[in-house]
Every structure is written in structure tokens, then in C-alpha cells.
Image 1: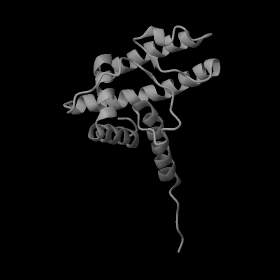
Image 2: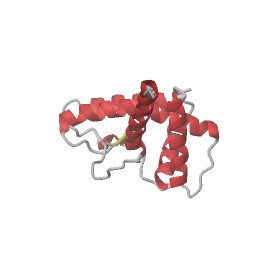
Image 3: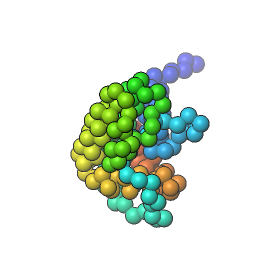
Image 4: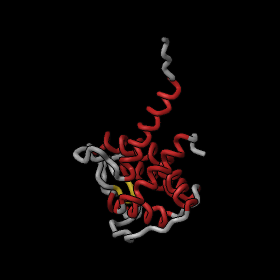
Length: 160
């Protein structure tokens, strides 16, 4: 009996796993906490509400924004790492978190923050709502699973 190996399906699953892993760093789902991924964000570490009540549209838009942000965040973190070594936590609405960095690193951080704001808003969210949802998924395992499921669905449907 001849067995066939569906290479397209394998590549699709491999790509899905790779993207989810990358987004995991952005969204705080790292499976190896001993190797933290550089963090670029807005806002303080304020506690999220205990329960969540976001529309399906907001959840979908959040997942779309997170996917769109992840590759750029990773690129910028790597560029800053080349300049400063270990990438510090960069918080977009706290310029003191990056203005003292050497070389071109502050300019890279500002550029990323500007692009991130545009991406978030282009996905139909405010930065404030995006940050609130980020804190919520970091503190609420069931919400995090809901976001992960939405990202997986977007990846499997080609982002539609």
C-alpha cells in the first residue's frame, strides 16, 4: 500500500506552530520562561479586571493586531539587541524606558511604537483597549485560550 505525505498540510501546520510560538512571546505565552523574549509595549503593569467582556469583533481585531505586530516587534528587538546587547523592557508611552539607550536604539523604538499604534488602530482598536486586552490575557488563562484560538483560526483561514 502506498502512503502519501501531504506536504502542503505539513507546511501549513508547521507555519501555524511557528507563528503561534512567535506570538506567544508577544502575548506572554512563552513555553521557556528562562529565555525571555524582548518586550516592547505600551502602558504600565496595571492589573486587569477579573472577568472579561469583549465583543467577538474586538477579540478578532486583537488577534489580527497581535499577528501584525509580532513580526515587526521581533525585527526591532533584534536590531536593538545588536546595538545594546540585552534588550530592556521598552514601554511606548514611557520614553524614559528607551531614550537613554545608545546609538540608534531610541529611534528604532520610537519608529516601532509609531508603527504599532498605526497597526492597532488599523485593526479597529484603540491603544488603550489593546493594552487592556493584553493585560487581561496575561492574567486570565481562559481569555488567553480564547485569544490563542482566534489567532489559530486566523492562521488556518489565511488571516481572513
